[in-house]
Image 1 (cartoon, rainbow, N blue to C red):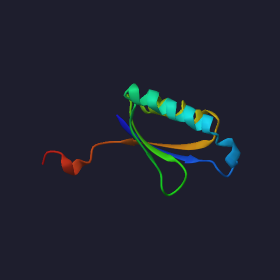
Image 2: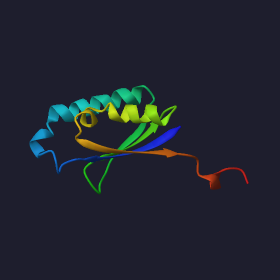
Image 3: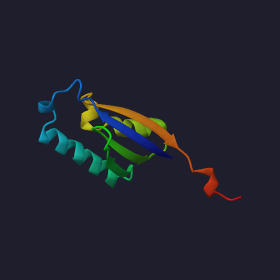
Length: 95
């Protein structure tokens, strides 16, 4: 199954000095690990707010959520995560 994950940085609760280069590097490293495992299919930075959009491939919603929550920023409560399961668009299927 594929999942869309929207994240939002909780900048209202965490001041700029908490967003250290080391923490952001750890976040990037975890994303690379999930990518190499075939879980993260792609990731994009959001332009509307501070955050990211990830496309995940996982067997279950629980596994997808666990992958998203394994990110260092999620473990620290610094990002909000919204998980949405996806299915194929029916107009592209057989008629």
